[in-house]
Length: 334
Image (cartoon, one colour):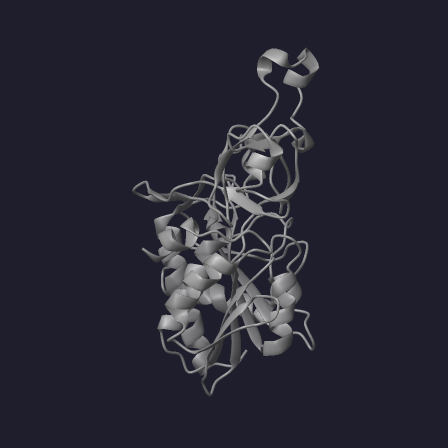
């Protein structure tokens, strides 16, 4: 299954080669394919209609090695936004050598009462690969190496559990769109370094100069919060349409079109509640002369962790909705 291949692949921000090659193998026969200098994968499916950019980011959150201690402990820093409270005892894998390690900390027996009652500082954590010296570690891991969570894709019936559903689910949506034919000038764009500042998207949009851009994401779910006011999206209620976040506001006409199509075709949808966070739309919509932009996301529980989860029907309904939106852009001007 494509989504399994995509989520299993390694691709921390700044080190996306493995996931890029896997996606490239799926799409290179579907259009004119190139990789730009920053690492974005762009597939141009030429057409006579509007120039439409379909974007999803390939990168995932993870870790970078900053130092190796004499006793073999590997010191690291996060790449992207990761809650340090989820890290202790998690298994990780290094991209370059596929070496597996665990994230360790001071054992509870040695912690003071104040340490036990406070969130752990990420600077106090380390990665342990079972080595006892710096020299032994450096046979497998060096400063500058990237690591991510070791996690397996699991089909849970109605749900899928995997790492990196933010945003490999978006990459899968773009791939599905490239398999179809539209009377549009389509640019399927798989961007890099979104998790560290939307870096790839701006570069890609500068080259493409889209008239319309649709961005696909795995977005925060948090329906398990105690208070419903803290909900952002809810799994099983359909693709989430963004009104605005801290980096962009959706174009009103494009937003109206998406909602009308969903309602006309009985496709469940929801609005993304909350305006925090951001995605590649933040860079794409204001590149050069700007473009009409909207974001459609699959609600994702436990985002930025090794156990993120999506509802299968939300994923399928996102694909169905996007196909109909693209069909409408063939025929009607905004």
